[in-house]
Image (tube, rainbow, N blue to C red):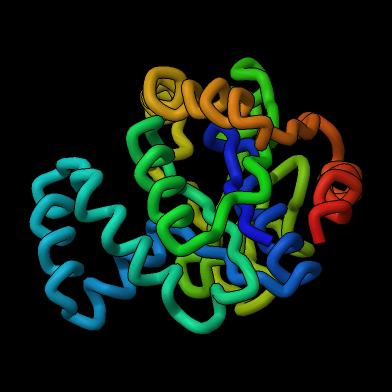
Length: 216
């Protein structure tokens, strides 16, 4: 099963991606993780990406696609994958579809976790992350057992700069102008599956399984 995960920042993609990966036994692949792994390993592509990232610039499509392509060729992706954070643009989506077609493969679905911008503005300032293990929480919707402390490693939780109100607005603009057009692209290809992301986490998870189970 080859799935793309779509949705605005703060829609709960990370949480649901974890559940999807475990339930269907497919790797959860995020471009952020791909970048960091290649940079840490000092690969040629990783060093090229780092040059752009250090300057605060977007990594060009050609380089991003190559990094993703290399990752999809690894053995754990042979039975499928869940892509999170890629493609971000229609151009990237077209390139990805062409790459898969060249390998006689195709996407099974583009899963959209749909949440209105008004709710995103309420949600994101409440997100907290553990700087040590990366676990994520929300002060209202998914709080830790002890306020401000990670359940897993007992580190103090922090608020990312990206989750502050002014950063949220900037990220929503990027999503609306670049990523949202992907919805129309995948709808035209009859690949779009839409789930209401405003509900409780477990309700969203159950709805996602109803949509994805027929694809297995």
